[in-house]
Length: 89
Image (tube, rainbow, N blue to C red):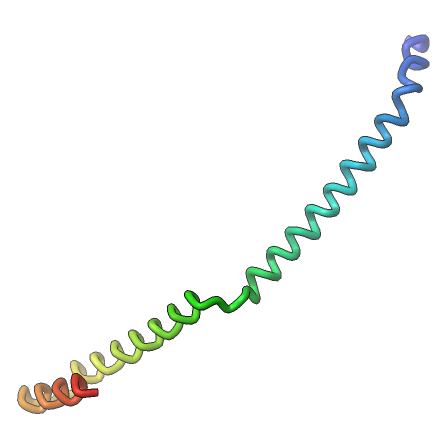
């Protein structure tokens, strides 16, 4: 058994070199993952996301107006006039 260990000694530099390369690669991967996480949190403001935010705000405002119309205790004529006023905006 001890005769076989001497055969492994010449392979030690290759094993250590491979280990060093692997650990360097792993540390670079961790850094890249951190960069991606930071980029996702404060991602670049592109045109599409800006448009979606504006559209979401517009839709929320419309829903708020509709909720106000439906929850107010107005007569039918008052509701019709309010809806017409809102259409004219």
